[in-house]
Image (tube, rainbow, N blue to C red; front, side, top):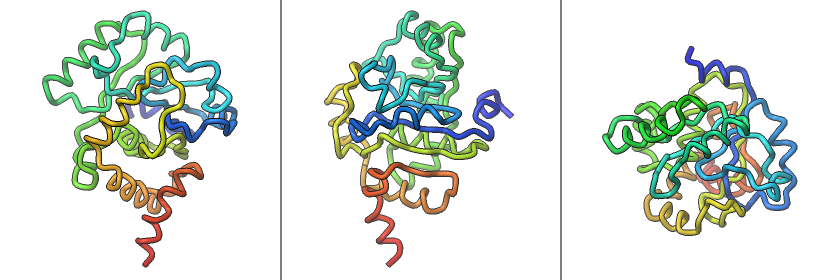
Length: 220
């Protein structure tokens, strides 16, 4: 088994998105109670004001490494290491030249401070017929479930029906870009199907409410 697989094997995992559905919910302690805490893209560093709602730990970061949205410096990666990040997972397979360049750029500034892996092409191939171009959050869900984890709890996702929490590096323009490039209706339908058939997967009440109509359609 890979080093990443050994890290998550048999563990409870919390995948925390940036949606403002977590605002004022006081979920931080519950999130931190999981063996592994996973976050997405621009969540780091965690603002102190958000920690009561989103937790304090980050073990794994799924990131698109897009230099147009966030250009990492050595100091950024060093802080990740100090904050407990063990792995950065690139949300694209290292197949296209532009993605290989992103990986090389991150490795150059990282120089071993955190471990890095790219998702396998099989994840994108699995998702494309169902959702088209996949969100990083759904990619993380599918990738994590490939490993022998005990449980995956997903929270802080709204499928862009709400804004973001006050993370300094998240911008409103990211929402518009995501809605232009990712079909959220198909994402919701796929997530609902995944939730029905995958016993290790659980979601927060807000996500349950969003997905309820897709589950109801299936029962008819």
